[in-house]
Length: 110
Image 1 (cartoon, helix red, strand yellow):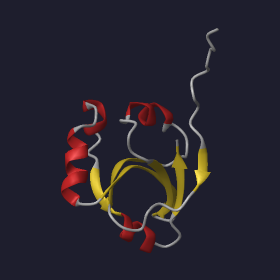
Image 2: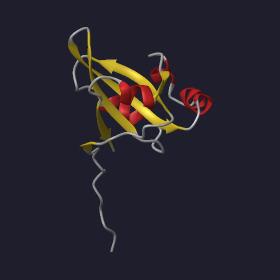
Image 3: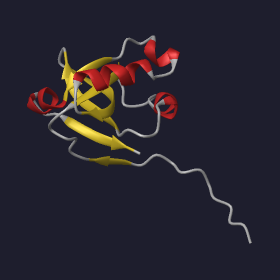
Image 4: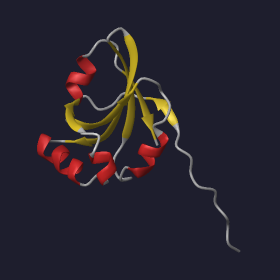
């Protein structure tokens, strides 16, 4: 007997990202929707977060990909992202600096 399985949906939960190491900021949006197509394109072996912050006195949401020990590992991960994701200009961010920012609100995706 073969079980049919539905595709697994992304789950969203408030979570504290690791406070050491580095991540890749993939893109930022002014609304907390529209991330699903980009999340689906990211390689599945790394954690993904959405971080809510305030930018120019308005809410801003950033998509963060991966937890890497070094800047070099994070930079190498950028090179492995699909070309259309790379075209957004992803860059490396320190998780410590994200946690030091006023009111980081990280939501784990997956």
